[in-house]
Image 1 (cartoon, rainbow, N blue to C red):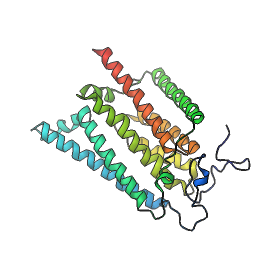
Image 2 (image 1 turned 135 degrees about the vertical axis):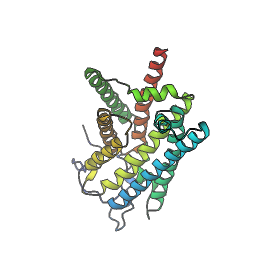
Image 3 (image 1 turned 30 degrees about the horizontal axis):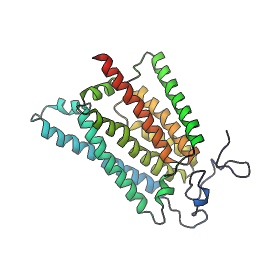
Length: 276
């Protein structure tokens, strides 16, 4: 497969970057190479920002759950109330939307506070040509099919029970769709494949190391799944990171993420109807 980042017949993947790297179709926008000031936060600053954003993200979700429970029940003393709240579709919807909005604002703030930064370049907000979209989307769908076939072969549920419980408990399926399919995908890609990946890519990790590290971080935050589920998410994270590196576009990784969650949501709806 021809590398669109290549020059003089050689790929620059794996070389230590010296600044922002736009998508392969936007090389003319690379204005920071050779400058003394790197418009991207260094690895430690990126990690600190990442931890801060992660903590606030979790705190917002916790606050939404507490507010919702205070309004919905008078028996907060029952520890089972909070356990059930984790799989309540309506609570999850509001918590995900609220934390995603706050998270996106914090990511934008982190980029804005870096002197000389450019939102479009920093977060990889580039369109992708149709040929690349078709090729990588087909590869992604093939990966999802392979993962589902493997899951079935291992006699495991293709759709985790926790997700079926969340779907069935949601009064508003539209709100759940907005939260799980749209809001979560947009924030997670801007944060993991956009902000964190660009910061880690500037280090000895390079592009491939940043793909690996962000895939690990992204998978371990999905604590609602068992170890097999987390491993599956890790594989998907590797693919999304690879798609981001090859296309130069976080928007494309975001679209693939929405596709993944959308397919899962569709099957949840289908299985829910079959259970009736």
